[in-house]
Image (cartoon, rainbow, N blue to C red; front, side, top):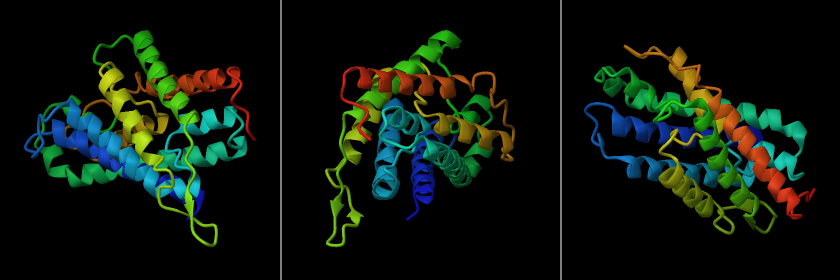
Length: 248
């Protein structure tokens, strides 16, 4: 599988599960309505798991522009490949959130609250204070990236040297990492910690024919884009300053 396709498919799976669980929890008439934050954070974490399982052997399963940028800063990923990965991630996030909308279309139609209709697509702050919201995204992403940079994911290979399966089960630690970030730091902004995860679905909210939808809140949209990028850069800088990065 080509790396671009792998990033697209992996991010699509992540967002289909992530947008899907939010729709299940917040939209009217679903089986999971009002099931709570623990359900949301758990499904997002497991969505990361399945995305990494599929894409990992072929692209490294970045699934997040912040990861691609951080690895490029540390010298572990070529800068020339960053735009291609980011494009695949954004398109995958759009496609995955579109799938979730299609699955829950009747429940979107049954829900009148415009904010609830938006929730499966983009993040929104619990208390709107943009500087504070930006800090939340920076800190959450910094935790994500610094742990990823200290993690190794060697893959099992077959007799021909082809990577297969989960290797050292690297997908599991990343899933737990995203889970704990959501549980501990996600209550402020909804923990985008991934520019593609927010921008792509937000764009889908803008263009999809969602009955009775409200604003896509582009005035806030820069926070879950800039925050994770800054967080990734800070984490990569710390990693390099500690003298363990730069392995080309």
